[in-house]
Length: 286
Length: 340
Image (cartoon, rainbow over all chains, first blue to last red; front, side, top):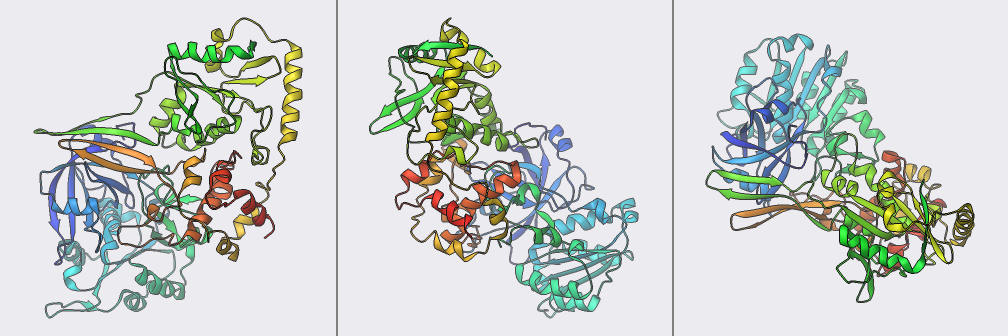
């Protein structure tokens, strides 16, 4: 970070807002840095997060949805949170328009283990809104010559219905590629849907990615994770080769404020990315 | 190391003289309590105190602290950091347990990767003068069980020890030595040092309350799900007094406050004892009852901090023991854990 004080956000402008889903509560915000040196200093990798900072409201930790291969901007896909009591920051963000100014702190946390993933067959499993940092990883891996650094790439992505799928244009583009095995599914199809119907765990079973030299990167709602993990255990994936990302309430994002720990590890600085083997070694708090 | 002898009745004068040159935090009587406050002109420091009601951590880590200020203008938001805005200060007369807490907090706020400039600036700009406990102030003191001693310079720049008619002043750090001129010209002789060592040994002996703080670490490593945790939280009111008074508790919240076009982002003490501490916007709370919160507090002090920094995050001051409205006693909890 160019600003040496890690608590002070870098000023950014919202350059684009994409309304992702037909319930209009998930939007992708594209930010451009006001200062060139901030942009140069914001060196991130897929899987890291940032604190979105709105003056007068506060900050929210959100995974970075763009890939570092996309230059000149950084994107975050944000759900308006809180069904009963609205989230201060995410509600305010959803009210903002293109051109609005705000702040970002980051990049924070650890990325997907790219060095470990290199040369391996990658299986990406995403459910619903938790697809954002997986999207970052996919765009990173398929960018230009980066693609050569990885083996086969299998993507299994599900949403409750077709209207809730994120990044619809990109899904179409990815579907055209021959070097990706893309499997998009919905829990419940509608009349216009021509794709696959079925829950993510069932689709994983059907697609049955091989365990040889393979790593599964899985993000989704708890119920999806719960039923998907046994499928991968049955396929013979070891816990070291199943990787996920955790969420906790955070404030500082830099391991000081003391609330996002799982045992002796802080999700903000030691995570959010952990393998199941690492999670097994953590205190079984949650 | 410089060592001086000062007459006991000279202490107040030294503090007042320093207060003319620096911001001096000293123990002062406030209603029924003794608190560390900036020493105002003509105010009397109260050095015959036992210990302050609150830990003096607020000198480096204020209860509420402005992190940044911002103003909405026609050209957008203009903001400025409030980091490094500190004056040279002296923290005069803390107890060795509290000075020990600064050494512990340094490990967190002055970590290699992320440095907390707000804390560090105040810490570096402040000279800490400890007054040794030649007699343990309270029956609940247990510093010797958690790597402390009643006569110890750990975390301090200058240590004052009452050796009878005089204070022996030991200047432990270059920062402390810079203040040597305030302490007169009487160099301490070897006899004074011998006396001090005798007093230190006696004082250590006089700490009767002992807990197996180190012994429980391997037990905590394995007993996260022990039914024991069901037994300690029942009477807890979640008032947060223990964390508020604790010298090593450092959890904080960050929030924004706005008036008109001007706003501030502030951090303020938070507490793992509060239900809201970990509650997420969705309503989900990973630590859903006081049981999980008590386990977190105990684990953080006697296991997690040890895992992270190889130090127990407790200095044995006994404030939480004395001030808990429902008499929850961390010494008893540690004792019970040692028998699991």
